[in-house]
Amino acid sequence: MKVCFRSSVDPRFLDEYRRRHAAVWPDMLRALQDAGWRNYSLYLDDDGLLIGFVECDDFDAIRARMALTEVNGRWQAEMARLFEGSDVPPDQGFVALEQVFNLEDQLAAVPPGPGATSGR
Image 1: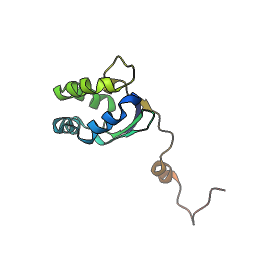
Image 2: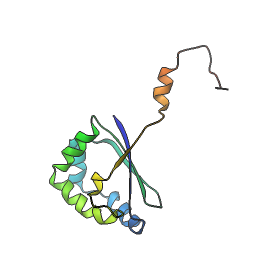
Image 3: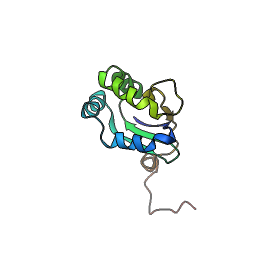
Image 4: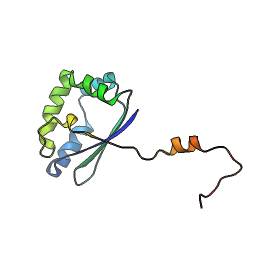
């Protein structure tokens, strides 16, 4: 399963958010890996838009496993003040986005044929 999600960092704290994610605690990194987060990346825009991507077996299950870890509780408490007006921990405020296109999936569905077509 591939999941893309969005959230919003308070624009006043972008530099701090970047700094903290440049050196995530080693026990947090291990907890994410142990919980099943694979190929996990975060992207941050200058207006605070945060986009995340993760590959996993089950998004709800990996989030639930992380919620049970002590290190995640500490991390979320540290990060909470960096997010815009939310009354839930940052990792509970993720909004999953609908995937509407995947090149590899569509190419796999194209029947083999002679030569390439331009689509025109």
